[in-house]
Amino acid sequence: PAPKPQEKEKEKQPASPPLPRQNAKITPPSPPKIICDKSGNRELHRVGFLGEGGFARVYEVKERNGSRLACKVVTKSSLKTKKAKTKVASPPSIFMLAISLCTQLYAEIKIHNSLDHPNIVGFYDCFEDNENVYMTLELCPSGSLMDMLRRRRRFTEPEARFFMVQLIGACHYMHTHQVIHRDLKLGNLFLDANMNVKVGDFGLAALIENPGERKKTICGTPNYIAPEVLFDTANGHSFEVDTWSVGVILYTLVVGRPPFQTSEVKAIYKRIRDNDYDFPAERTISSNAQHLIQQILIPDPQMRPSLHEIVDHPFFTHGPVPSYIPTSAHDSPPDFR
Ligand code: ADP
Image (cartoon, rainbow, N blue to C red; front, side):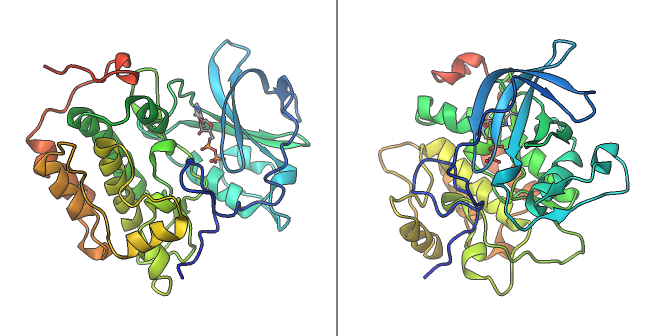
């Protein structure tokens, strides 16, 4: 049988695999209404709740100067008991804090803080008090593409091109900075006020420190996991797992549900292993979209197209790419004529 991912599953279907962190089911107390760091230099007013994931809760906060941010809060008691005393001597100075963090949270902070791209959620800083670790992030007030898909059921191909070009740009930037996201999915693609994609949640991201290095941790979200993560554990995986997820995302945008979805996680893995998916006859998916998806969802990671090859495919070059998406698209398909 396929191994179970040891990491989180956020999207509703199918049922979640085990949560990674101890006590994850116990709801921790809310962070203070006014969040301060130990030195008292930071003061953030909690003004709203944005959402929660596998281990973090995210709030909208207001700074003294009135600007609004997202603040991701991780309760220290929810972290794995195996903790690493982490002290990084190099800038940025925020890491001079000798925070006792589990290595996974430390990796998330280190990786996310190293990235700066218009289609990646901005990472501002992090600090702690006795109970929590706080990460301040660029506020994405329009929810995620998952929320939007639930309302819209599926997207038009011009919209899909717009979102995919931005996602692929962010993905290319991450890969050239040796970062594999490993959990690309609609629920981690946030939208800013102008409907631009912002890739978020670096909780499973990995840094490739040596060329040719392979990662062995089985992680991801069932519907979006590449076959080599599940079935080639001896060889490990690399950047191509994100390319696979890009293919799953494109399918999901234009069809309205992920390609390998079923009600049981085991059955999803079987379908991924057998490359068992099809295009619903009742929906008109263009032959270019179908061809590109088939090219990306190739089981052998070495045979998948590069990100450059993907944006050079006729799906992108032979159809309109809107210059922006109106906010009305939250509820109804825009008219691009
Ligand atoms: P986890 O790492 O625990 O999965 P996420 O980073 O996915 O947590 O965040 C959990 C939820 O919080 C998201 O699904 C989303 O609803 C909300 N959220 C996260 N980051 C932001 C942000 N920058 N702006 C607005 N909402 C956010």
